[in-house]
Amino acid sequence: MVRTAWLTVEAPPDEGPREDGSLQGLRALLARGPYVEVDYQAVADEQALIRSRLRLLTEGEGVDLVLSCGGIGIGLRDRTPEATLEVIDRSLPGLAERMRAVAGERYPEMALTRGVVGVRRRVLIVNLPAEALLAEAALHSVLGVLPAAVAVVRGRT
Image 1: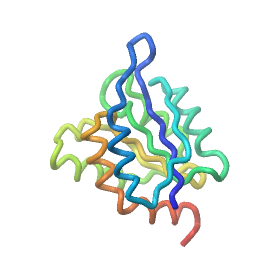
Image 2 (image 1 turned 90 degrees about the vertical axis):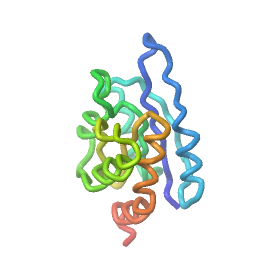
Image 3 (image 1 turned 180 degrees about the vertical axis):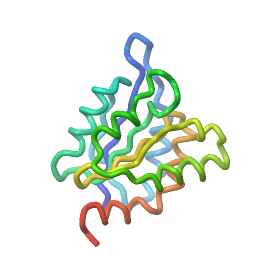
Image 4 (image 1 turned 30 degrees about the horizontal axis):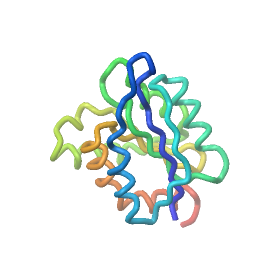
């Protein structure tokens, strides 16, 4: 079982709510197992808030995997990669590169994403795009590797 937490990065309230259409499809992908959702949180697309929430989600023993959705594009407000880099202990660029390469075969705009993957303490953090099709393609490209990565990070192998 991989205990999974979601962090949706949203537009600030003054810009109106960002519709999170990607979450339903992503949850359906994870429902195939061995994932179980243990937390869901949303945060404004502000670096300090994202950083703080990632730290909270990776404290203790309750979460194995944090999947963040949104804030990884090239827009001025897109700060999820910077916040993630501030909290991780180790980067796993191979997984981020795989998401861009594999999902990019079908969706060339994946080349414009800046998501990172890394480890904080004993928790794997994966940044995904906010757009539903891109997020699903990106997650699908690494889904088979994530349980093994989590096992290694958790010291189970």
